[in-house]
Image (cartoon, rainbow, N blue to C red):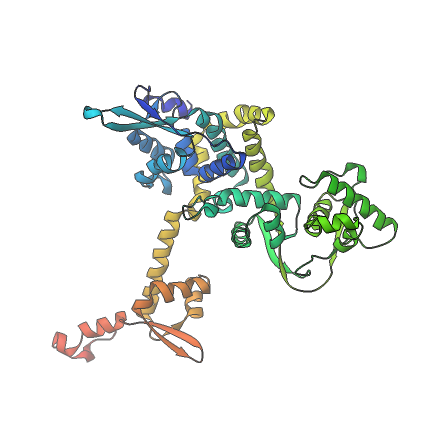
Length: 459
């Protein structure tokens, strides 16, 4: 029996006042909404537990959620967080409606949640796609796309920003930080933070190499792809055609293909009017190399600059998750047909297995696990420093508990600072507890405290 059929007894027909928000009309806002909603299996499951024609009560929703994740760490998920997903994530973007009934004195009372038309049309396929992808690829989407934050408008679009960067790097690999920022119209600090997060998720390589800081000078040679099969790079049809033509001229003349060599081929009036020409030439050359029309050669010049390149793991997310998700939002009939025939029935039929597998992938990155891990690490540091017969350095503590030195340093200098004695010797800090366990034990066993000779005890 399907999971949906098992849960029908919790569905109640709508008879009260229904409140719902409008699903975003802008394509970017829609993508951000879905990425921020279904990059966690907990939210994807909540979406699928809600009925379309009717509603489910908050208590029943919590029971169903815990039944789906029964036997896993997520089964004990806080009930307030489950309901909060509806109120704070799915309702504001128009995927879920709130059902109210009118009590005495005209006061509204929340009685449950149900799917909106957009929730059924976009939310269910997107949630199923997320769970299906995570199960097939054995990788959680959460580390890649992150969460939607409330601090400012830039951070609220974190999932969308990271998706745009991945999409760009899939088309044009080996771009600099500044090139990514300029191409997407995002400030440098946001791009840098996103690149670091994407690197930590394993979906891009992000490291320093040696092109010129202001002008990325890379030599290219002819690749295997014929000119007739070249596709446009991004939205630049005419620019791509011009760059391809100039590359062919340079090849025929026996000259190196570089950004400068292509730039000088453009008419002077174009070079003067088109301020971003150098940057766009560089992006186009990188895209042509990705298509194998060109072959990337050596860097020319000087100073260190950060470059980013998509990994196979990142390419899998673009092809297996982002592409069909965007197709769904763009009303692509082939994509919708595939999702409704091949993905939604499979995931819905075996929701518990898909959810639990995704939950295992997500849990090590979840806030609850990180809080638990944080408390355990702090406890271990206290334990080690309490029983140690001598002060220990940050490096020694890092080796003992197997945590990175910078993390240990942050624990010592922030969380545990008020409990520690810190002694600096030749530029190295040594840490010990202000009150060690041995001192407490010695105090409790002192002759004054016990009236007995301390020689009788061996500690």
